[in-house]
Amino acid sequence: MASLAEIEAMIARMALGDRQAFSALYDATGAKLFGLCLRVLNDREEAEDALQEAFVKIWRNADRYAANGLSPMTWLIALTRNTAIDRLRARRRHPDGDDGIEDMPARTPTPEAAAIAASEAKRIATCFEELEDVRAQAVRGAYLDGMTYQELAQRHDVPLNTMRTWLRRSLLKLKECLSR
Image 1: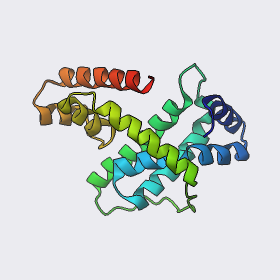
Image 2 (image 1 turned 60 degrees about the horizontal axis):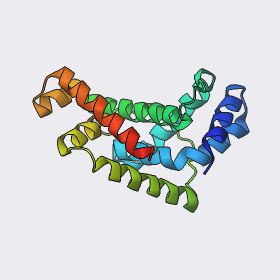
Image 3 (image 1 turned 180 degrees about the vertical axis):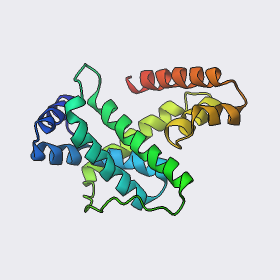
């Protein structure tokens, strides 16, 4: 797995139009980001499409990435997660609609990348266990299932600002757990 500094360097080279950096970034992060898409969309084919769309966005927005000391994976994961959630919401609005995106051949993750992704998934699952059940459900609903804060507040019968507070505090706990 590439180091965070190497990933930042790849993004910087992509901002200059370096296609080899794009390929290297895909190889280094594709398996993890695909796992995220698959978790959000729960459909392999649609997850592949979402990953492709996310990498197009990453390519187009590489010049907007600011190396500010935060993990470049945070930027990549947020962009990918938002892409998958957008597709999930579009699916809800248009259950049998075609998004018109052309298919690109997908690269399969290497065994090493798959093992790393599985290890990361275990770490995240362990950290989720540290949250109260209702708050873990809220985080999954917001960040994996694409639910809005309003939908979550209604589901859990709490005010909207309370839901925002739950999510913010839960994310901070998850961040702290993952940094140990």
